[in-house]
Structure formats: C-alpha cells, structure tokens
Length: 112
Length: 115
Image (cartoon, rainbow over all chains, first blue to last red):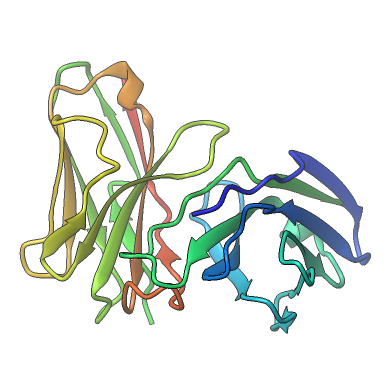
C-alpha cells in the first residue's frame, strides 16, 4: 500500500471548516483513500473513503485531486468534539485481509 | 447494537508474566484484527483472522505473541514472558468481511503496562 504524508498538527476555529490535507503521490490505480479519526482514549473511527470521485457523507467530504496524488478531508462545520487525530490511509482494492497501515496522522485541535 | 468490546480495559503486569487480552467483535463479523498502539504513534497491525483461522500474522513482533479465535467470534491475544517494551494500547477491530470496501469497527482498547 502506498505511503501517505500528513501535517503533524492543525488548528481550526469552532464552526469553521477544517481542511485536512494528505499527500499520497505514489498511489496506484487500484488503491482507495480512507480516512479514520481517533478521539483521545478511544479506538479509531471510520470517516469516509474514495477512489477517484469526490465523496460526501454525514460526517465529512473527501476531495481527491484528478491525478489522485493528494486528497483533502473537509469537516464543514468543526465542533469541539471533532478534536482528534485524523489518519489518511491508502489501501488496495483487493488488499488481502484489509489490514490498515496507519501513519502518524494529523492532530486536529478545534478551538472555541 | 453493541460495538466491539475489549477486556480488561487496563492491565498492569510484571516483566516476565503471561497476559491474555480478550476481544468480543460485533456479532456476525467474520473478520477480526488486532493492532498495537504505542504512545504518540498510529496503530500498528498485528494479526488478522478470517473466521477461525489466522489469515495474516505478519505483524506479530515475535513468538511471544500468539492469538486465537477458536469459534470464529471471540479472540484472545496472548503474550508470554512480557517485556517493558510490550507496554502499549492493544486495539481490536472487526469487519463484516475482509473486503477493502468494509470499514473496520474498533474497540476502546486494552492498555497494557509492563512494570
């Protein structure tokens, strides 16, 4: 699975959009982009995933560039409860067993 | 419905002792994963079960670590002759299938401290 690069930390004002970038320049055509987050003292939680089209669900939006070398997770109206470490993970479509390879993630702090 | 549960939530043991960590996956989930998370790091894959069999144990650090899932539901991670470096949060996750399309649901973890 391709490696991802994320900034170690970011701040966001409550009520504003949080835009979390991820670089995955070595991604191959059969790899999805997944996002998970981990709130302090909890297990990771799935947010969203996509292949090449932009995706939106009740939690967030995922914007993948046309060349698929980078993506941005958008939390449209961040709340204090969105403070967490956000992990961008690249994973092959036919990944045997589906194990997740986590990097260091981005620690997002939402401030009042 | 109930999520993934792990027991105990905290375990303190002495160097050299044996420990067992338990994971109860979501009912009906055939895929089960164990991860280990050291302070300040992302979770690190240990082992994956599909049903009763360990389909991928490439992440187990050495032969002191072993895991079982005898009936395809509950899993136990066993660590022999614990070392201080084994101190970490051990996370369990389950998925309805191992397909890349299926999200993994994580438990709250067991915090293991080896003194």
